[in-house]
Amino acid sequence: MSDHQNSDHEEPKAINGLPFVSDIKAPPRQSVYSIKYFLVVVANNLAGCKMFEIVHVGRQKLIGEIIRLKNSKAFIQCYENTAGLRLGDPVIRTKQPLSVMLGPGILENIFDGVQRPLTAIHEASQNIFIPKGIHLVSLNTTKLYPWFPSESIKLGDTLSGGDIIGFMEENSLFKKHMIMIPPKISGKLVMLKPAGTFNIEEVLAELKTPHGVTEIKAYHYWPVREPRPTVEKLEGDSLLYTGQRVLDALFPSIRGGTCSIPGAFGCGKTCVSQAVSKYSNCDVVTYVGCGERGNEMAEVLSEFPSLTTRVNGKNVNVMLRTILIANTSNMPVAAREASIYTGICISEYYRDMGYNVVMLADSTSRWAEALREISGRLSEMPADNGYPAYLGGRLASFYERAGKAVCVGNPKRKGSISIIGAVSPPGGDFSDPVTVSTMNITQVFWGLDKKLAQRKHFPSVNWNKSYSNYLDQLKQFFTNFDPHFLDNRRKIAEILHKDMELQEIVQLIGKDSLSETSKLVLDVAKIIREDFLQQNAFSDYDYNCPLEKTAGMMHIIVMYYESINNLLQDTSKNDQQLSLAVIKGNMKGLLNNISAMKFQDPAQSPTEFKNYFDKLKSRINEELKKLKSL
Image (cartoon, rainbow, N blue to C red; front, side, top):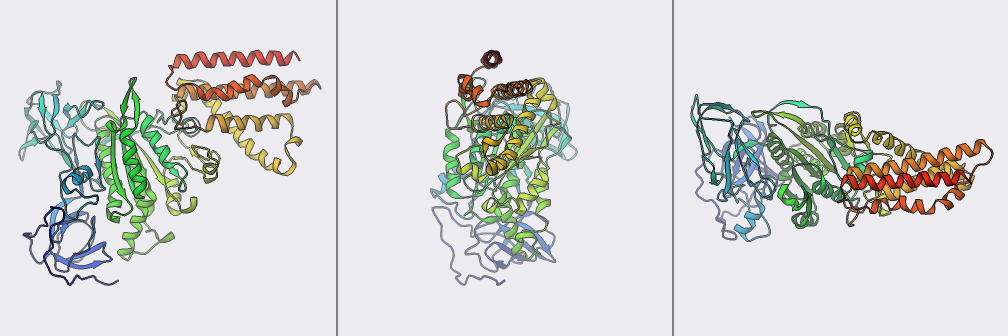
């Protein structure tokens, strides 16, 4: 490793109208000592600083974070390009960790990995790139929001962290953005602002504490690496609805669960993520694009504002409940590493209000690559594939922040965070260290298959490799929803497993050598693959599949299989076995109806679905009577 030194000592000029800071009042002893590979900056004479403290580096005040301390030297990872930084440039301490601004205005916004507002930066700089050293407030401090104080508190009450003092109407969909006392603050309420319209800088309440009067505004700051406090973690017991049959039926997750979606490039990870963000039964969606290609993030940023979903019977814009954190692969690696923590911290903030949040991280592989690169700059001992030895620990500390929890403060409330992490293993190799570590942590595995994607089978979830460990927790939920749901799911999984075994036999001896019941398994498995598991997200009839439709389709398929299987076994005992070809010839119309179940409009009511599937059950019984009379 060699030090980089810029010999040009001319004062830098303003770029795009954004002036450099040239009048920095910093002690000259706290200065840049060396620069390692344009990523890690070493500063000397910084004794007394803390790990993960934010510092401003150089005359442009580049944002940096201390990641190692050695004697009086501090190793700083910069969240911006260090080109042009010179030895001896000042380093200014902020004495604060990397924190995010939490308050009304987060929804519908687009941030980078350290919560800089990209739209506001573009308007200020008129540049497609983020200028170095630019510092803008994360949230709009001039926008006005309707404020409604809580009726359950009064002057003189003792309040503490997490207590709700009122709410603001953030947008037309998210009408109750709870304003909470920040954690670690408590005191007697001496002032509460009456209802009105205010910006987030307005003082809404005042608490008398042992240290004086503390002003409570609509926003506060919180360190991204520190989990927000909860009373206790609870076991999830309700389904995280995705609108995808293969996920909701075969590999379901709970609200507050952890899921991983590993898959090679082109397998449809983004499509699954968008489906979850559009149709999941959550209140808030946090989408973190972590180190993805620029054109992929550009597609997400252009498509998300145009996506709509139905809430309470109305079509609403998905962005009204979505936060986008965009961090592309050409942005500094260190900011990529921070973006995951920024996303989970914002998610915890909305969970503390009592809402159900889904966080989509796409992709954690790029995040792990950032860890690997920073680890290499620090000359740490590499582990498997060059990743740091603490990769599994960092992944676990991130995923453990998911879960259903009892929130701190009054009134009593519960919230949840579900984390869905996309993984991009090189070449679709699931033995990649990031994939293996993620599988060891997460409880749901939605493995995407390259061969299924090449056959245009989407979602390309491999039903032989994927799994869910939440079936026991969801047993009561599914039983209450439909007493036959779990039995039908088990039977469909059994048919798919038998089909996999029979396919190997068919390749050796051919299909004609199989028994009639084995042929039935192959035929029903084909119906399951093509008409149940496969789903066209861009169609008018299958873009979303309500749970009533999923349960009804499973019941019809299993009823058809068991009825025909029993008929074949009964006739074989009487030496008058019907062939499967004869049965299919007599039930051609019914088979067409079974294949056409997916064309039912997902906007129908549960009663309409029930009537439709009841008629189909009666049709199966009628056809069976005709077959038995042959």
